Image (cartoon, rainbow, N blue to C red; front, top):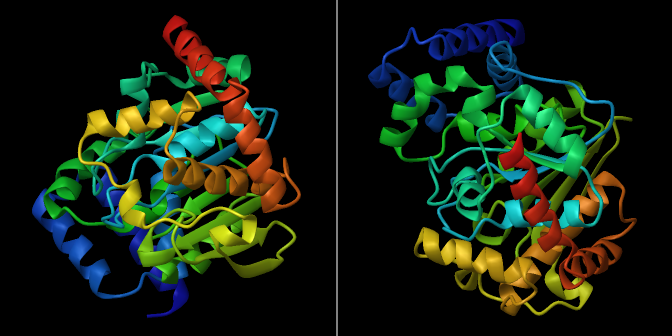
Length: 328
């Protein structure tokens, strides 16, 4: 099958799925077929474009950052990307955090923000006002991707990562120009990065950590793929010790319940975190700063992130977000 046919076929299949024309059992079979073979750039592009057709999107007159993992790494860590995004916002980076409830993981970003007191049910107009007022907004996927309700049951029953994990971060309703995306499968890094740049992103940073974690890892190496709108690409490896941070086992980041997850996140925001949790956020927030251009180096980004937490700015940002989102 040639490239055009692959694009057209995947576009057509996805169009039928999110239009509600495909039954759950058939969707699961489609998930299984993609599980057996590596998704191609053409297939991914067709799926993304078909999904974007049904998206409630909006444009703003300034650039924003989004940070998220594709999920499916099975490590059950606390919500590292969500807290890292808040830390970036505390440092003055505008953030439009796109996310959902848990599907293939235990704790989705929507579950966390709701537990923290944020109103996650903002419509388009409210989301724009929230972003303009406090420099952060949480964009709950079902509010902006109503068609995705047609795959919720299939994703839950399938119970593993699917191509929806891959495309989720590529469907930001605010068209985030700067994105950090973690992948549990390193083979997806290039097609995701290239696709984002080809569809308007200014810079995309794709991350694959040790043991498949879809974050910058506090244990061992993390592979970083950088993609820019000038078509330059860069690939390199970082380790915590490169920035004088102690290394910890990934098991120290695991959580057993939503209550524990929320407590860990609160301790970080209150500058009372255990060191492995803090280091995970410092590393990931630093990459967000670097991607957006707030920092010139990872080391500088770590210090900006540390100051965002220790000064209380990130905690103030959360309180502001709670107040603003619930007043709209």
